[in-house]
Structures are given as C-alpha cells and as structure tokens.
Image (cartoon, rainbow, N blue to C red; front, side):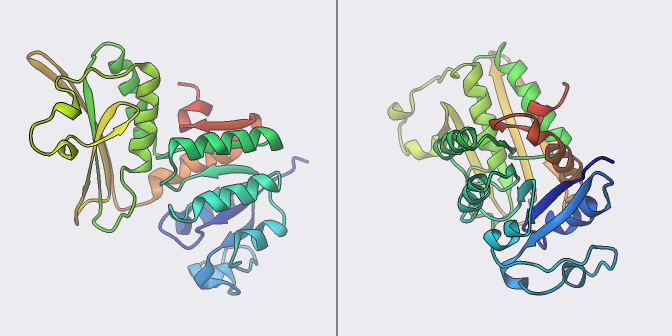
Length: 269
C-alpha cells in the first residue's frame, strides 16, 4: 500500500486555498493533514468552507500548531508579511515546502536555500503555478538569448501590497541568469525622474501597475530596431489555474534538496 503524502496548508480559507484544500483531500495519493487560518482557528475546516466532503479537520491558528499534527509537505498561500516565518518554521521541522505566496526577495530565497540544504529538505517556490505563466517564463528565457533588450510590466489589483509581484521577481531572476539586458540610456543619466524607469530585478527594469479591474497579469517586452516581441500571461478571477500546478509541486518537492524556483524546474519541458 502506497503511503499518502500528508499536506499542511496555510491560507486554507484564502482565494487559492478554498479550491486547493478540497483538491488535496480528494487526491488518492495526498492527505490534508493540517489547515491554517488565524481568523478561523478552532472551527472545522468543512464548516468554514461549506464543504461536507472535507475530512474532520480543525483549523489551527498558527503554522506551529498545524505542523505539530504531522506533515510531509507544507504549502503556503498566505501573505508577503507572513510567508518567510512560515517557511522557516517548516524547514526547522524537517518538512518539505511549496511556496505559493509572493513577496520574498532574492536574498531571502538564498537564506531559505541554505536552511533547506542544512535540514535536507526541498523547497519549491513559484511566483505563479499556472501552466501559461510557466510557459511565459520559458519562452522569455529563449527570447533573451536572441534579443538583448527587454523590460517587464506586471499588473495586479489596487490592493496588492507587494511590488513587483512574485511572478515578476522570479522572471527577472531567470532572465538575469541568461544575461544582463542592454540599457539604451543608463538609469542614472535619465533626465527628469529616474524612478520612472522602474525597479531593477537583476538588471531588468520592472514596472508594477496596481489598479482596480486587474487580477494578475505579466508581460515581458523585447525590442529590436524596427520590431518588438511581447509575451504576456493573464489570470482570471478563478484560482483553478493554480491548483493543478500546486498539486504537481506537492508531489515533486521531496525529490530534491534545497531551493528550486519555478514550477518548470520539476516539469519535463
């Protein structure tokens, strides 16, 4: 008999978590062993989500309490302000981690990688688990090998606090490993307001738009003399695109040690 993977989900009542929790519970090879939501602590998860098919599981108020119930993989879909401490707690307990929350810097990811290697666990972090977002990143890497100049624009709703988005940060990090983009006019020589040229993500200029009407979109623009290439990913208001990718990450994260960024790092593309 194959042992099921026990999964602890932080952000179980959030936008993605509401769809992910039932998907984990219904998977034959997975077991939803823990759920975290501070505002719903002490209540049955089935009652909170209005889904009687969910297992008899009490929502915990902290990650520490939920992990104490036992877990093989910890999944975080919370917030930029909480994710770092949550990941550190899981790694310290020797639990593999899937990070779906945004807001971590490259320096913080480097620290997570060191901690994961010391504890012998895997951490898979993706700014976006949707298949089309994964393909955007891969296509952008291919384009960057041929076109020397590019910039990133990421779009989200007006209330998204972190900027650039996790997807944009991940894309910038990946492009920086291809090469540094050429800049027509150095930012420090900009006339007017240098900040209008955006933030630097490994040398790539990135611009964040935060307005009502947007859910989550990202585009990378490549330019050559007389021609342009735009690669863009758009998300709807449904969390469905992220669920399948997260389940794949849960199943694969124990197959390596240390940090990997991007869902395609465990896919056959």
